[in-house]
Length: 345
Image 1 (tube, helix red, strand yellow):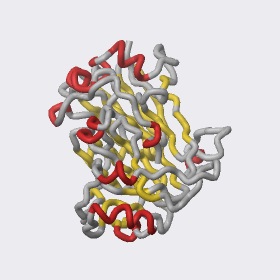
Image 2: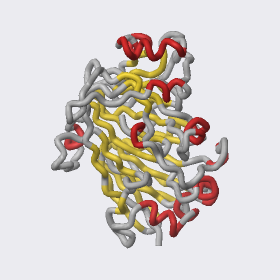
Image 3: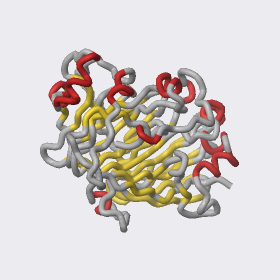
Image 4: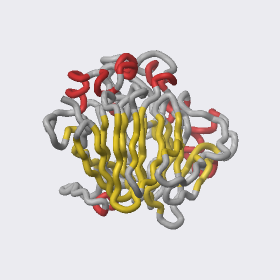
């Protein structure tokens, strides 16, 4: 029987990672740092495992294969099959991430992948002076990308933002981008770990080797247009569902909660994820109450008709689902193998 579920996190050591995730109450020892904590994933060899309840120790893909549309929604299952359609993370950038770009669905499928990678960032914590690179500040000719990357001048051509706590950025596939140091980020994205690195500050990995760049592969993926207002504006409204991102890949809303809220999902043909980005909360649905704190998420199956939300003091939640009416392009194909040299940040 399905019920609202929490999952065990997957911890990723990164050359740019820090230790802020530990301050949320997570223990990633023996890793020296945790650059990424994957809290909901169906990617091969990185499947999230249910933390408790009757389905404990089963991974997300095993549950999806059994419960299909009851878990993710009938139209979602028709479209995505046994591929869970989201990847959700917490990212701790103690140093700059590489300047990078991700392919869209069309290019990804042409290159043997099941889908592209559009993503959004919610800023959980930004240190003073923290920066985000988000698109081009000026028109950059395609033929100059390799030269700028080789000379270290690419960064000067890109748009820099100075994020604050609570800021939201949507990064469609094709947008050149990078996180700067001093940022703790909640990331919602398409389920791909494909990254084309354009510049990595001549930084060695843990073995002392420079990390591989993917200039040639990136040229067809890049959106060369300039970006004027990359930050997503929204209103702060307590105890209401405030939509912040609405795309064919996912819909995300922010809920600032300090009293109980009831949600009716009888007309929604999708699972719903509640991702706690600040405070302590609980999700009640299908006769089960699941508590969570910042950095955790709860997956509510599509067959749930109602959800009640509770908080201990003021809490901030991201509410995430997929609107099947917005699908574009072909269904995801199954059986693709990914190319390891393009994986990671």
